[in-house]
Image 1 (cartoon, rainbow, N blue to C red):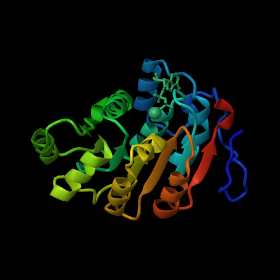
Image 2: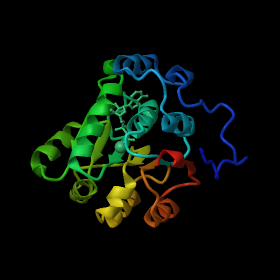
Image 3: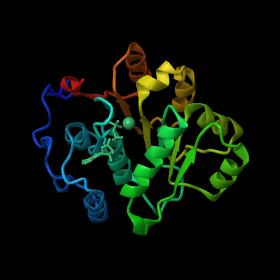
Length: 229
Ligand code: ADP
Ligand code: MG
């Protein structure tokens, strides 16, 4: 069952689409809806139907659902909806546990982004040399996707500026915690503007997630699709 313990009524918002509903029930740009159709994403998956209305309304969100349930598009559509393409500054940061996942997330956001807006998405992962990443950052980006260690490295060098950030996404948060990234995530979150939306996605809900939520999220709504485990 979908659980909304932090909504004022304790119940899902009345307009929550049900799983399987078409994406055009949501306030998404027509070009984004066209991209979804082109990808063959005709209907929302359960986690997308449960989390997108909350995320699009600007709330912080903890979303828990099994691997393969479509969590990437859930946060990608939310951060794209808030993005101002005319402001060429990093407005969204997605933290992922591994280089491979960061690359996959980067590709998914690119597929969903409005092509006419020339939204620039940069992947900053460990294992690649720093200098080309620093050069790319000098040219600017709207969205950065990366692994915590490398993102923190760029913040400490001053090559990444998060002053314009409005969305922070912690993807596969449980895996990032397993890999020992808690302190790096905390250090990054401390450098993000206080006035932002934080979206946390995870397949499981270990204690470290509650800790991250207490320290770095504001009255997050929680969506847990437990029956999918
Ligand atoms: P998760 O992050 O939950 O593990 P992904 O975001 O990687 O899941 O999505 C799993 C697969 O489902 C991907 O191949 C993705 O392209 C596909 N997918 C996501 N949303 C939809 C949708 N609404 N309709 C059809 N396929 C989808
Ligand atoms: Mg995922």
